[in-house]
Length: 88
Ligand SMILES: [Zn+2]
Image (cartoon, rainbow, N blue to C red; front, side, top):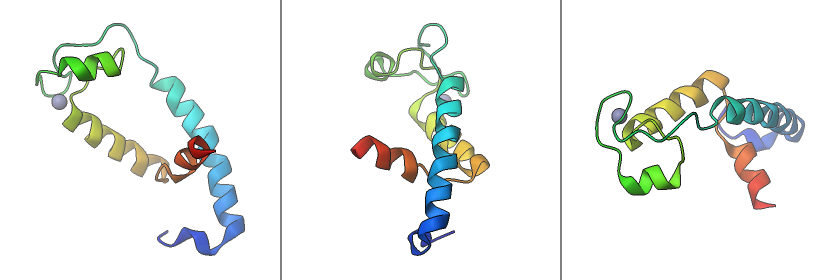
């Protein structure tokens, strides 16, 4: 899938499905309850700045990154679509 910009039609299709995907993902990732002081996965302390920035956060930075990568791989797209729409 590298170099996806070569085929405009395929890219547009990918963006369309990515937006739906992103909406569903955003809904499933809405903050639930209060921010945790310690990571749910590895029990590392979550910095206060991170808890303030992300209400309801329950993963430390390292686990969040790993989690995001897993999700991106699972859904088969790399956030380019949602980033693009934010720039408009
Ligand atoms: Zn963690």
